[in-house]
Length: 351
Image 1 (cartoon, helix red, strand yellow):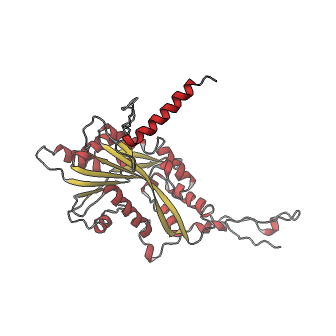
Image 2 (spheres, helix red, strand yellow):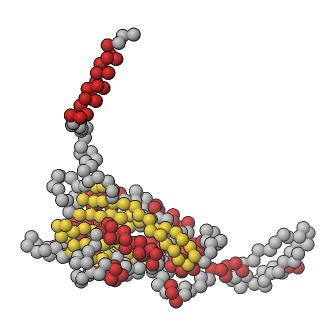
Image 3 (tube, helix red, strand yellow):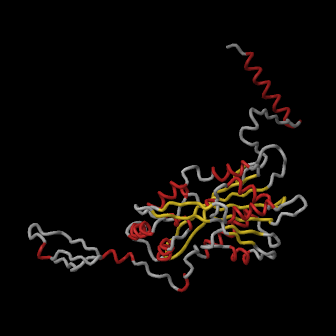
């Protein structure tokens, strides 16, 4: 068998010619660097120009979950807080046929500085975006002034807040009595998207605490009723589109990854988990849904429940050692007396 070799490698350096290889023993194979050409990701077709969208299947399921958790109605005064890249603001307005003017709010600004070792360091810029907007709006609120919003959606926005509890407090002041906010968050340790290993490790390091603890604790601090749930949303798209999305640093969490790490990460995927897949890939996006409302019952403590749990459950640590009683109806009393009689008879038997 004869091995064919190129005269240059991927960076233009000359490779050893076959006559320079050892004659004995004969090499089994010769490794070249031609495989690096596979890293050239083809541009998506005309039907997939939007690299900041997970596709129709994903968005339809996400709208269904938004309807379930936020209960967005056509006459609600609605505010959307989210980045412009991948924004669903206009699509939600059309999907839910919102009649009132919608307010689209930029979440905030994070500056990324690259270190000599190709690591991106995030720096949150305070007093910009949603934090400053809701602070000023809350300061202008008076007792005789009606809050401007019925429903508020925060998508991939919590990580921009420098003072989350204070910001949540300002947001709640702009919400009507029976209003509701919905937070959609993708916690790093719970992420199920097919990221490369460096991205998965970095996302987990950014959220070393329990994924939902920080958000719920900040909401608990301002004494609002909270419900939460972990949902999975299906995604179906061409493999090349997913790689192109990573190259464009989408979803937004990818902003913390440097260009060099993205390039090596795409190489890892094309030679790893996505090497033997077909043209289409299917996976799931695991998201945390947190809803918050004003307390409907002034009982001194907020209600924090998982969606589907009973609202009558006592708050942990408040109930203490409670004694529960069950009233026995007359038709069951005879059976209870019969059981008590059997127990007394057994106690009288000595042998």
